[in-house]
Image (cartoon, rainbow, N blue to C red; front, side, top):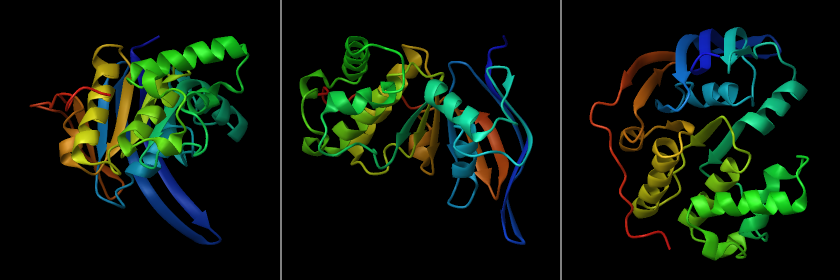
Length: 242
């Protein structure tokens, strides 16, 4: 197996509504290696969200090729894509997407519902993920009792719990103040640098993108540039996570 976790060749995407065809992506080519931290950046309408949905098996490409861990996933049906999504991908969204009157532990255990693990094994895996984001002391709190930054850390723990091949973070600091946002970037960097997780960050903010090691800039459905970050920002924890 090559060290490329994602390989995209001439990827195009268009949406068809009755007789109206709306092209969104116009022939993208790139490779993301295992263990990379890549930011996909661009203004609204650049196609970055559509690309993330395709890479995360939430949508299908129209033409081209998508290799994930050396497997061509371009022709998979919805059920096969859902299977890949459940086992290979962890998502962190701007809006957290937590169940409100449900404990931190139960929220993090959610992705394990459809696994063959015993209840005790699910609890153990969830506890480890919660520990990884510094929230063990909140494990029995309901998610609607948490601050925004804590909610996003729960979302990261939930994304981690299935040991995914790739973690997608879609505007993960968008709903947070600068202090909480820095704490989230610190956690993502630690997951990447210390634990080797492959992370794809989608953002429109240059400052946030510069915490990655590489930035793919998009504009009008095309890749405008794909470059290493020269002076990568390393997030220092603003106060210890409490």
